[in-house]
Amino acid sequence: MKKILVAEDNDSNFILMTYILKKYYQYERAKNGKEAVEMVEKNDFDIVLMDIKMPVMDGLEATKAIKEIRPDLPVIALTANAFDSDRQLALEAGCNDFLAKPVSSELCLTTIRKFIGE
Image 1 (tube, rainbow, N blue to C red):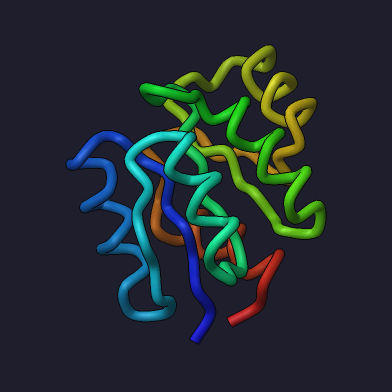
Image 2: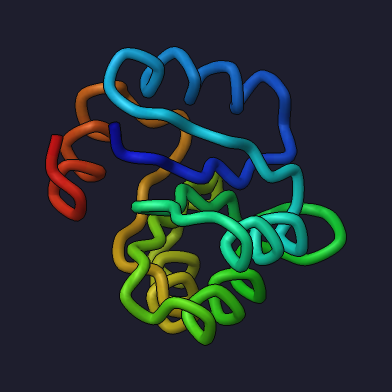
């Protein structure tokens, strides 16, 4: 089963993501960007779902660091900030795609499958 890192500091957003993912994927949680980077260094994830606004290290910084460690690891930005400028910043940081919260189950799963399949 494919393994996803969900970098999300908000408990209710994480619970929503587990509801979407649990049938199809294994997943682990990082509560901030620094934790996400450390977990990518130690584990073999297939994709990262990255919240942008997080404590300690934000998602943009974390994405840049993750791409230095594993340039081929897909990172999908997942954020409530859905302006074009936010999308542009996420893509410039190295995110492969961008989803605005709240995200539908269907769109989330379709986007993940685009990068890692079933």
